[in-house]
Each structure stands twice: as C-alpha cells, then as structure tokens.
Image (cartoon, helix red, strand yellow):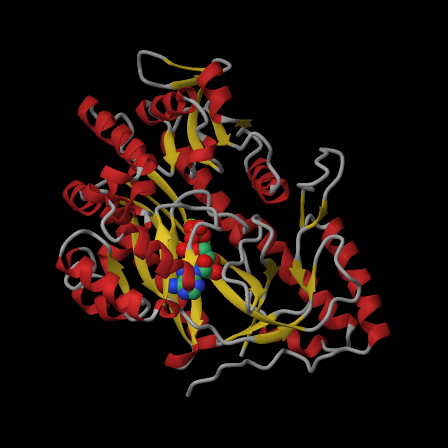
Length: 478
Ligand code: ADP
Ligand code: MG
Ligand code: MG
C-alpha cells in the first residue's frame, strides 16, 4: 500500500478559540519543562524561549517505528566494526581526503594517534540513526544518515511526549495517549556516559562536555548534566570549548587528560563536528590532545570518521555490508538503505553523474558535513554537477536518491510565530538513539536508547531544529 498522506491524530483544523487557548497552554508547558532554546537574534543567558514544536504528535507507522528500534543495536555494532576496520576506512575515504580538508584533518589525527599507540581503546558512541518514510515504497523507513557525533535532542525529546499527552487531554482526546510510545532517550544516553565513566575507573575523575562558543541548544545539553548529577552525585561535569581545552588542559605522563588537576574520564563532544568550530590551529591541537589521552571519547575520532556520508555510501555498495554484518541480518539492514552513489572519478562515478544530470530532482547531493543546511537539491544538484564535472572537488560529495516522505497536516508553534499558526503540510524524520561502548575486540554495552521526531514544512528541503527550520515532535503510532 502506498500513501502520500497520513491522517493527523485528530481531525484538523481545530476551532479558532480552542486552538488559541491550547497553544498558550502548550507554550507555557514547553517553557516550564525546558522545551527551549536560546534566542539566536537577541542572545542572553537570562532567558530561554520555546523551541519550535508541533502542537499534536505526528503519525508514524507502528511497524516501521518498531523496525527502526530493533535495528538500532545492529547498526551500532555495524558502525563500531566499520570504525575499527582501518583498511576499510582508508580505502573508503582516500579520494575524499584529497579534496575535503576537514575530513582530512580528522583523519590525520587518527593516523597520528594510531602511530603513537592508542592510549584508550574504549570508545563511547551516543549515536542517532535518522529515517524518512518512503511513500512510493509503502511508507517504509529509509535511512537518511547515521550520526556518530553530537547527536542532539535526546533530552528535549524525552520531555516532549508529556506535553503532547497534556495537550491531547486538554482537547478531550486523552484516550489517544495509548498510541504514544515511551521515550527514555535522556536516561539512556546518560547511562552510556556513566557506564563509560565507571569503566575508566578512577574515582576522582570528571566528565568533560565539549561545547560551542555559544550554546543555543542549552536545554538539551544541560538536561544531560542534570540527569548525570542526579543519578551519580559523585560525577562532576565541566563544560569547555575546544579553545578552553587548549588553554586549560594538560597530559600527564600516564596520558591522563587533566583539567583543574582532575583526570578526565569521558569527553563528550557537543561541538567539533564542523569546520567553523575549529577557527584556528588551537582547536585542532586541543582535539589531538584529547585523542591522545586516556579519556574515553564520545565519539573517538574513528567513530566520527565512520559517521561520514562517504562511509554511508560505501556501505550501500554491493558486498560491503556483508563484511560487517552477519549474513542473516544483511537483508534487514540493506532494506533501509536507499540509492547512494560515489562521485569518484571512475566508471561508476561517471554513471552517477550522468544519471543525476538526467533527472536531478530524484537526488540529493551531500558533502561530508554535519549540522544541516549543507546539501543540494533539484536544480542546484544539476548546476553543481555541471560545475564539478571535471573538478576533483566532486569526490568530496556523495549522491543520494531523494526520499519522498508522506505528508501530514499539523500546527507548528514557533517563538514569535503567528497565533494561531495555519494548518500546514508537514513531513517527519524519525531518529533512533543508540548507545555502544567497546574496544576493537569487545563490546561492553550495545542498545537502543529512545527516539526523536523532527518535523518540517513539506516543501522545505531540510528541517534541522537547531538550524531553525524544523520543529520538535513526538510520534503517534498508527
Ligand atoms: P546532516 O548531517 O547535515 O543532518 P542529513 O543527511 O541529515 O545531513 O541531511 C539533512 C537533511 O536533509 C535531513 O534531515 C533531511 O531533511 C534532508 N535529506 C537528507 N537526505 C535526504 C534524502 N535522501 N531524501 C530527502 N531528504 C533528505
Ligand atoms: Mg548528521
Ligand atoms: Mg541529519
């Protein structure tokens, strides 16, 4: 069955007065429970404004939701193995490294640390696998990407279903709450940090969050700190930028990373995933120092490399998955992949270029970047490919088949937005969190850890919430 449009959980539109009242309630609920972000235009640390959210939970097929959850430990392990396969990473990234300076810098650190001898063989992964439903294929989930660094919104997404439940009750639809799945992303992710801390096994050690110069997504980050502190009052958490890490940390003779005299047990990156977060060589030096240290890194540099779009594309190539996933599971994993093509300068790369030039609307062109807003769509794909036809730069990109998700009607509530907002056509992207801790040879923990749903206007190409385009949402299982 194919369906281009899913029914909203209750019939829309709502009556004007009901809508205005319920939006006021929802906004206050959101503000009082930290469904918030800092204001980018008028930045102050004295106020939080609502994060954009969808008023009612958006529908998502139950079987596909469950499938995504069941797949998560398999995908965690896949990425863990890929990250520890030096030859695969080298072979896969070799052309990209020639033309993508950022990936090359990460890779350089990895090679350096390996040559010196790895001090900490454990890695902590707080991953998020993202999906859109593909309506031409019966609304089946298709993987958009796999995030291995700074996977965000686990915390706010854990609070949000309570708001949706409250709103449904206020609208007299409390009976529908049973279709909203529990979400324990925050506690799941934090327990990963705590387990890694305990494996480090030094009682006076601290946890270090690597943060941006300015953290707009402060609620999401702080909830992790509050949660860890509540569960484990003995663990102190520090927040430092890469620049501060450069200035304030040292390595001792045991390769412990010291901050204010304390050894760092776990380094959790909420920054460091895009070039702008390394404005000078100091930030790169800080990254190298951390990587050299005995701290457990979330992610370690090879996890970050395994999370590149290029690796995603390579895994979709025939025969690749079989190297990492047990034969009986390969089919289930391959089923969530959509067409991904290398743009290297070889026969298959040329074929991919020709195919995209013929019908650019069918594709998305992706560079090796994170954080949203970097991809090209439609006419821009064509223009970029024509421009790069013979430019080496081309190898820094992968070509991906465009997924066509079904739409659903809904209300997006934004800070400063119109009240009431109009009913609009939306599409949702599901993210499943995963936690993994392990070394090359041993996996200590591997589990799924809750979900997030992020919804954008149907006609927008991208929907990053932090980037200001998407809205936080909760799934309503059909
Ligand atoms: P990033 O790491 O920057 O988040 P993504 O691969 O997630 O990169 O792409 C950003 C956004 O672009 C996604 O959230 C999704 O909205 C859109 N997008 C990416 N790939 C596709 C695709 N194949 N089909 C449709 N939309 C896509
Ligand atoms: Mg990403
Ligand atoms: Mg993404």
